[in-house]
Image 1: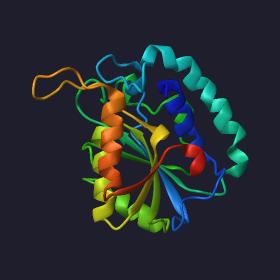
Image 2 (image 1 turned 30 degrees about the horizontal axis):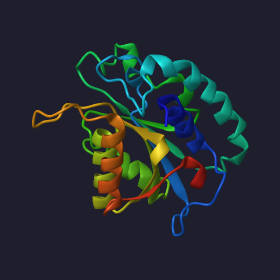
Image 3 (image 1 turned 45 degrees about the vertical axis):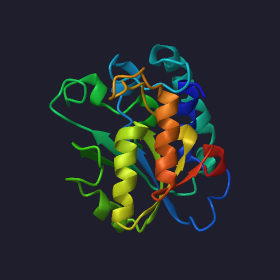
Image 4 (image 1 turned 30 degrees about the vertical axis):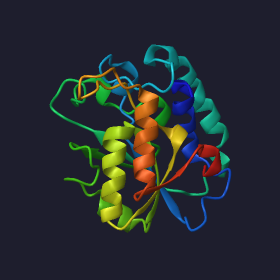
Length: 212
């Protein structure tokens, strides 16, 4: 799975091509940290497989057209955008990296929530916003799988929400081995994180085409 494909499939969450997994009805889409920094910053860049951020921008932008073509299937599913904000340069409000990537630009009426912690519920009104629109089933996509996606999905369980993740709508980056071993590849971290979430916290499906 190339990183640009991951971005494209994330955009597909606006559509509704096939039924959700059994028992997942009346969903809301939770877009976690679609910050521009993940496509531009050397230290924060997301990777999936052997594709790098610089290689994926053109294809990611092209993915917007595919998303637009699927707008007719949206079916009124509400989308909540969570955007990371901090005093550090990468996520500072004054930096370009803070903004949501063009392909995921919120439309009129879509909610945007700024957060300062990996857990999207911590210090925000996300829970009450979701309650206000009556959505307990969440389709979660975004970045990074091991950090903010994982923290948010785990917290969602504590808050009484049910989460579904398509494996091709989340991504992460390579990480150093904390015990001094070789660098752990992004795709390995991605699969292990999803396996852990699947054990208790989320319904994991291979592709957005199965739920979007």
